[in-house]
Image (tube, rainbow, N blue to C red; front, side, top):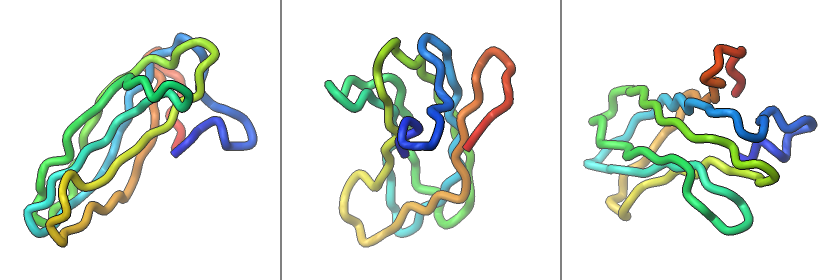
Amino acid sequence: FRPHELPVDPLTDGRRYTVVLEYRTDRNTDGYTFVQTTDAWKPLGAATLTDTGGEWRTLTFAFTKPAGQKVQLTLGPKAPTGGFVWVRRVYLTPEDGAAPFG
């Protein structure tokens, strides 16, 4: 997910955001998710998607949008187990109380 590719980039330089991700996995699948810059691939925040056994879970992690940088959210399985990672919802909430988007 690349917010800067939306008609209007909703992220503000220097603002801290919480990523809220609702996901599930199966077949003993663990995964990863992280936010990084799109030029130097600098990691800004990350979380592990632990196997859920098919149940939906919600996880959160935070990052700060660097000035003048574009960012992206990436996720996927850690190793090929034949299992899947599903995402039901992902949104970003500014930590200063502004409305979430996603």
